[in-house]
Length: 111
Length: 111
Image (cartoon, rainbow over all chains, first blue to last red; front, side, top):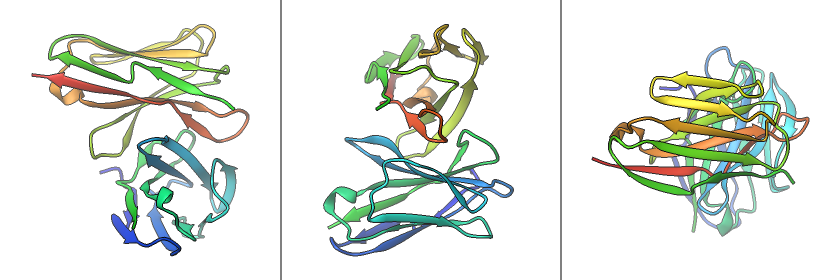
């Protein structure tokens, strides 16, 4: 058990919809990272937050947004969903770089 | 942009045989990380290498960082079925907090 909790585990929705993925980091970890994993793109870095502030942005689409709240949990919002957004979304947390503790992921399926 | 490639993409070995995966970056890395992802699981942090030419061992696993800090390798001695999974290297993407994951090597071990 990594101590990182992601909800929901599975999400099935339709194109054009909006979803929110949630991540609770390990106790004491201030950094939260979001990654997208798909078969053809591998593990792609989306965004990194540290103690509520955005620290780095990767290949995150404009339709995607994220935030980290004062209690350090984070949410990743995906809107205007497309078939290509189907993937496994991982959250990771750490006290320092690099990301050390990954959650079990949220599997998003767009129908 | 920066690319991190791994070879081979896939390796099938008999239990007891050795295994090596190689990681090559298009740019010099300040550090490199290795992760293991079991089938259906999440990435698990294995180790971080920082110094040029650094070699670290974890039981049957030996990690090496190249002298030029542009490549790295992971060697597993006498593989076991528990070693099955995809091994990823990852390095920082420039002067940011991005972590760029390699393409991964999938290891299959036949008992």
